[in-house]
Amino acid sequence: MTFDSLVSAMLDADTVPPLLGSVVAGALIGTDREFLGKPAGLRTHILVCFASALMTLLGLRMGEWTVVFPEGTQIVSDMARMPHAILTGIGFLGAGVIFRSGFSVHGLTTAASLWLTASLGIVFGAGLMELATIATVICLAVLVFQRALRRMAPPQPVLRIRVVVDAGSSYDSARLAAILASGGMRAGPASINQARASGQRSYTLLASAYQDAPDVERLARAIREDPAVQELAITPLENERA
View 1: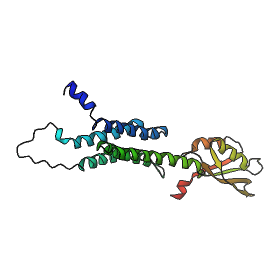
View 2 (view 1 turned 90 degrees about the vertical axis):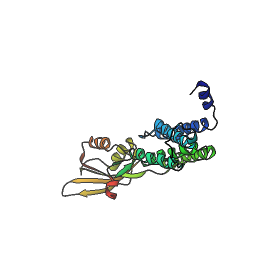
View 3 (view 1 turned 45 degrees about the horizontal axis):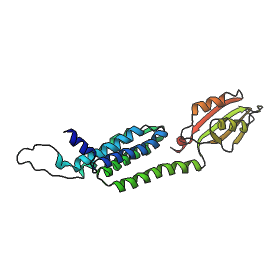
View 4 (view 1 turned 90 degrees about the horizontal axis):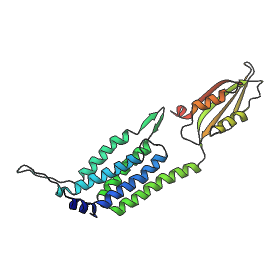
C-alpha cells in the first residue's frame, strides 16, 4: 500500500459511497433507538450497518485479494454466502437485546432493527444505492409512524388496583384518581364494595398508562401515604392474561 493507492481508494466511487451510505443509514436508525433508551443505540447500529457493507464489499472484490493457493486448489465463489453469514451473526447479536420481564418480552423491535440495519449494510455494500436509500426511508417511516400512532391512541389499561379503607373515611375514588394522575396514569371507572361486617369499603379500578412500564413501587408508596388506606393490591393485567 502506498499513499497514492490509499488516496485512489478513498476516491473510488465503487467503495466510498456504499460505506458512507451505510454509516448514514445506521446513524438514522440508531438515533431513533437511542432517543428511546434502547440497549442497542446509535453506535451499535452504525457499526452493524458499516460492518455489513464492508464485508459485502470484501466478498464482491474477492478478485483483488492477495493470496497464494496450493497447486491444484479449486475455488468456488458463491456470493450468497457472505450475506448469509452476516445475517446469521446478527441473529446472535439481536438475541442479546431481547429479554423477558415477568410475562412481557422486551427488545424485539430493537433486535429487528439490528437485523434490518445489517440487511441495509449488505444492500449498500452491493452497490444498490437507490434500493438501500428507499429501504432506509421506509424503515424510518415505520418507526416514526408507529410511535406517532401510539401517542394518538388512547392509553391501554395496564394495572388493576384495589384499595380498602375504613367505611367512615372520607376517602373516595376521586382521591385515588388524583394520585394516579400525578403519576402519569389515568383511572377508569371504579367499582365500590361496602362490607358491613368488617366496616370497610373497597375501590377497584383499572389504571391506564401513557408509558410502557409504570413505576408500580412508587405508585404503591403514593397510595399508602394516605392513613385511610388499610389494604392495597396492585396487579399487572399481563399477569391475569398469562
